[in-house]
Image 1 (cartoon, rainbow, N blue to C red):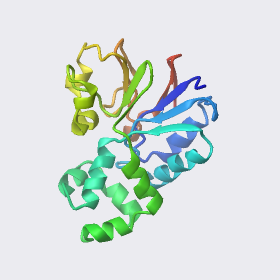
Image 2 (image 1 turned 90 degrees about the vertical axis):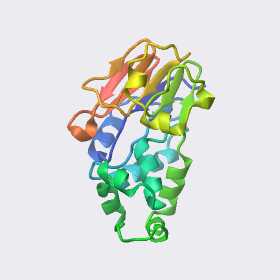
Image 3 (image 1 turned 90 degrees about the horizontal axis):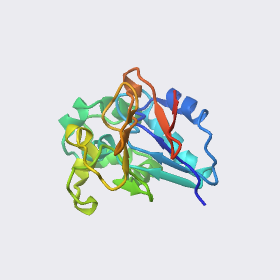
Amino acid sequence: MMEKIFAIGDIHGCMNKLEELMGKIPVDRDKDLLVFLGDYIDRGQDSRKVVDFVIALNENFRSIVYLMGNHERMFLNFLEGLEEELYLCNGGRCTLRDYGIAMTDSPAERKKKIPAAHMRFYQSLLPYYETENYLFVHAGLLPGVELGKQKIDDLIWVRREFIDADYDFGKIVVFGHTPVGRPLMRKNKIGIDTGAVYGGKLTCVELPALKLYQA
């Protein structure tokens, strides 16, 4: 029986903060659920190490959910030769350097440089995850649109239209994506991207207790 949920916000290659945070959260590896809200890579200096780290957690934790962030989506597109400038403008160069990918590489050459385990990880990321009382998503939801009809681009990119909405989504929405100075706690949503890669903290929220842990 799952007892608690620990959701972690946008890591963006901040390996030191991730290790520190994991050392602080009192998660039970056999009973509790660990949810990563996406944006493991880009902007920070250790994207590849972060992916290695979160993949390795599978060996010790029974229940982990990995969500897709807009940065993972952009990276996958880049590997296919799509929207390259968009990715570079959003901090992708750090990740390309980690994998030894050059701009002159063809899509086939780019993909060959990604370890098989990492490619499986990127391709397996979920657009959202639901429990009885919570809905976990990277960026948010469009108010008034059924969950099954939400587009992936909205789930990983939406900002003010979601954050400013007083809309009842049926469950409390736990999200990252939009950096805030301190965790956003409202009756219909919880935002935990506290700008780790911009000098802020990496945040985890424990549910249903609403306890916060930061590094």
